[in-house]
Length: 245
Image (cartoon, rainbow, N blue to C red; front, side, top):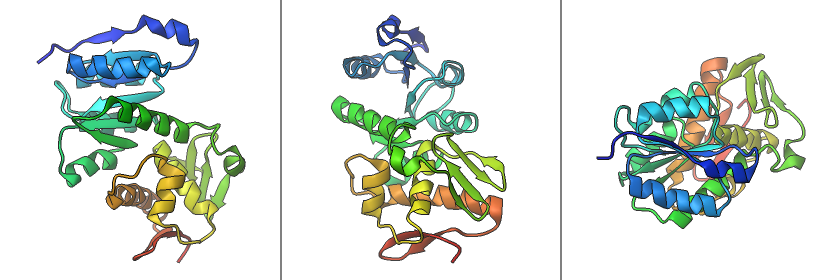
């Protein structure tokens, strides 16, 4: 196994002030492959070879996005994701060699925005990164996001990157925030999983309905914990609806 390492890429000079993408992965060959495709897309890249260094860099370097391997030395990817999510809303894509659906969904439940299984196509990973960056950018969907969404005690401001209940800030991932905003904008209409995937997730669907379900579950849990009420309702066989009842 490669020794933990941290490498700063000097190519960031060519991309101006754009924030880098952080790769947290202990396999040098995988890092080189990901770096190659990201740099082709015009990104600057920084690296960490273990969980502890990866968490530290994610908190101090303010990357645009983190590509995070699940199996890491010193601290595994799930622990890094949970600790990072408690401090930051940075988009996270998990890399996992585990093919079991429940294991992959654990990454989403810990706060990741997306995941991809090994072995993976670097082109697919690059496409996933572009999709996550599009849906987490405050410039996207400007027409829909120009107003703050409010319902009862809940306030969502996509541009400010905030979700509040009775004025108190809640910790939401960017994907959860956009999904909640989409539910609120829809004014009580039933939204199918397909419409959520198309409008919010923004990447080719892989057949896992539970990916959407997990994001919905996280939103529902956070709102219910803060309000004692259920706002996100499952309409069996059809999708999800936002409202008081």
